[in-house]
Amino acid sequence: AAAEAEALRRRLLEHARMRAAADWLAHQPQLGQTVFARGQPGGALAGRAGDITDLLRACLAALQVPPAQDADSQPRLPPLWTASEAIRLMRQRLAARDGATPLEDFLPPLAGTGPHHTLRHRAALASTLLAGLELARERVVSLAQEAPWAAIHVTGRTASSATTAEPAA
Image (cartoon, rainbow, N blue to C red; front, side, top):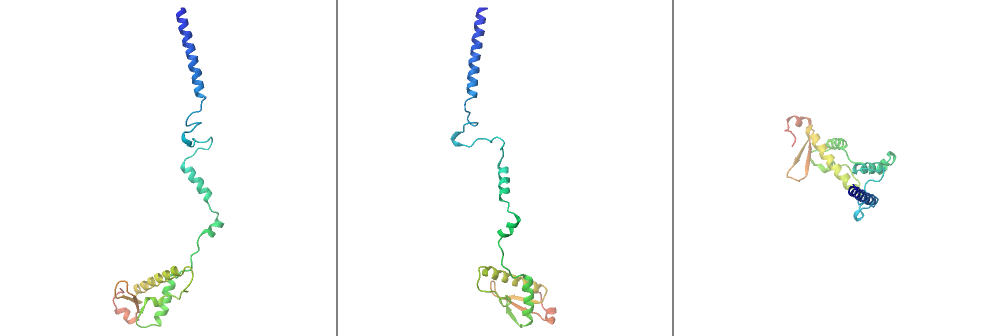
C-alpha cells in the first residue's frame, strides 16, 4: 500500500509539473497570434475582419464623386459636324453644281487652328462620306472612285437620270 501511495504521489507531482509547464507555454508569445515571422502583418484585428472584396467596396465608396463635381471632371468634346448637317449641306451644294465634284468640296468650312482641329476635320470628313452614301442609297447622287484610295467624286442625279440609272456604287 505504501508503494502504491508513493507511485500515486509521484504521478500527481509529475502531473502538477506538466500542468505548470503547459500554463507557462500558454502564456508565452505565440507565432502567428502575438508575434509574426519576418514582419508579416497579423491576422484580423479585433472587430475589423474583412477580405479583398470589402477593401474594394471601401475604395469605391471613397472614390465616389458627388454629382455636382461629376460634370466638371468629364472632358468637354468640341462641337463636331454631324451626318444630318452634312446631308443638308450636300443637298444645298448639289443644286449649284453640275458634273462630278470631289467629295472634299462638300466639307464644311473649318477653322485652321485650335486644339481639336484634326478631330473636327476627321469628323467632318466621316460625316460627309456618310452623307454621300446615304444620298447615293436614296439615288439622289452617284459616287465614283477610279482606284482604291483615290478621290471620291459625287455626281448629282436629275429626276430623269435617277429613274434610268443603275444603283449607286
